[in-house]
Image (cartoon, rainbow, N blue to C red; front, top):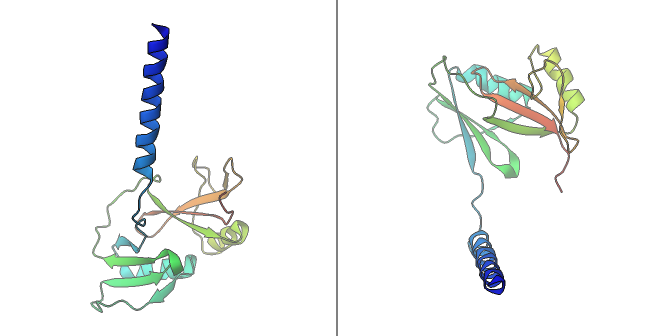
Length: 157
């Protein structure tokens, strides 16, 4: 009886492992990020914020309708700001964009100079979170309340 149970359990494990591997292996290439669209209430204010705080570079946008500003993220894609949002939205910090910088200390000094409030994950003001992997991170909001994370550029292994 024990031999039958061991055989059944072994078969289940073998079949589950095969099914799991088949689900993660694909002959098709992965989708890649093209752009992130952010709906904003004041296009000029938001464009100035993303350009000056994050040093994002504007790129040409094809619509030329006064409702869009596009920024390049290099090979990562683009950020598209789109005007027309209502000003009363509230966002959860769990939903955020994350940018990496070479020096979190220099970036924090920039935020301080521009009087932009920032917090750590727990909500403590002006104090970075140090994750278990050593990455330092802070959180702050854009003019519409969208959360942004900035961390130092440690590479993931």
